[in-house]
Image (cartoon, rainbow, N blue to C red; front, side, top):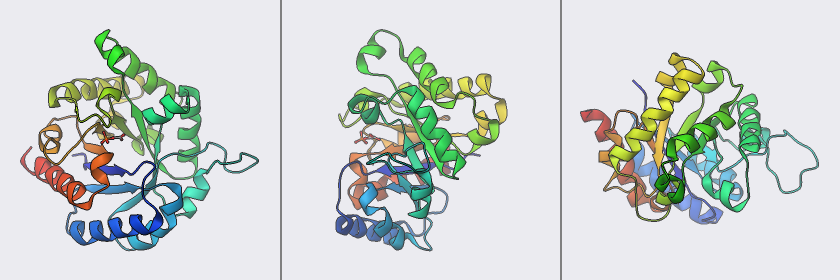
Length: 257
Ligand code: PGA
């Protein structure tokens, strides 16, 4: 059975001081949750401070992005060995905000994935369609192209360490989440694609998160879907109360499904 994974994407929010206060509260309130893997992804500037708070806890640290080269003359970039050094186990790759605002391509996303895997990070690769793409019936085509673009050439072993996050762009930060049936339909398709493109074993064991306006209210129903193995949470991860409630809802969804 796949262990659910809930990750908080703090985006461009929180100074180190505020990040430390948030993670201290999460540690206190989530210390007894063992059947859900919990990840927090602060901005780069708060990684070390948060890592110090997470020492000895079950909560893992993740970054929101990674550069593909390990080092060099690339002003402003942060590499996988640097993230490992800061205490990260995960990194988000190809978030739609990076695709949209920073024009990240599938090729760059693939290079980031390879760089992350080479240095021992577990990537969380984001895929998802825009509203016009959905309305034109192109959801599967877009998701397939993004998956192939990112994972092209990866081994089954690499895939076992990779998490996919299905995040329909129209659901991110809008308060309009995908329905459980919509999430399940696309996530089942993603698992089929993984099975067809690589082999059945990683496809069965890989975790596929849903992201886009996840709240404490909708998490339970989303997570009861057979191919929804966790959540990537933006806005609701910035407050301990809502993030804790989501993690607990995920734990209870798995207990009943
Ligand atoms: P949201 O963001 O939960 O605020 O919709 C999700 C994400 O961007 O990962």
